[in-house]
Length: 202
Image 1 (tube, rainbow, N blue to C red):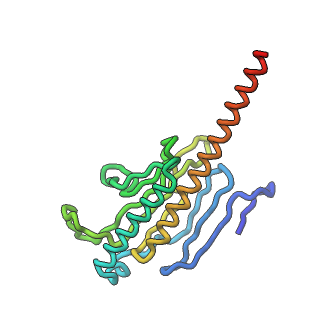
Image 2: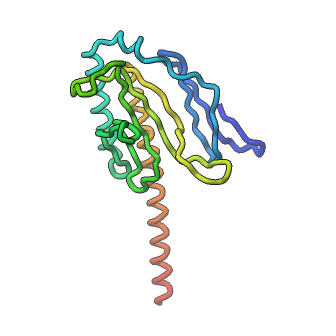
Image 3: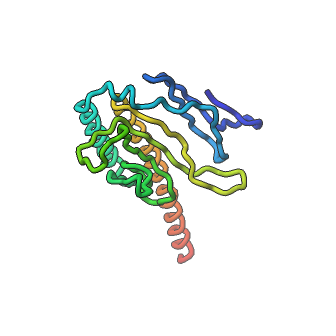
């Protein structure tokens, strides 16, 4: 569903998908104006659903996520930087983080592991019960300044791992395509300057 401004230009496209626990809403914004979204309920608590999944299954899905994210890293390594040893307690945006390789402006797609209450943080073999994810990007504020703001965020159960990997892949692909387009423009400008310089030397 498209939403237009008073001039008839589309400012956002809204997608709503049915999920196992309700509905997921995705917004593709087509303008640089600050878009405030209000009224959404918080994601359901993970524990009841996650505890129904045994630890072996959760560990299997954890490895699937790890391998899937590294596959995304390899596919878009030219334009996207990735690390998987982030520490949210040390101000990293997540345990897994994708960032634009060229400009570290704060844009990122980050995934943070969620654990059951009472988890022993010294246990190296602890297994998450789910994952929080957030996509951050620049947003134009009412005063004309630009600040990093969440563009989308959510929570994934172990059974939603494939969808979470797809989200990361979509973010990486969009960043890669944007970077490639900017590089193409820069190459064209460089070639134009070379042609102009040769023309003057004749």
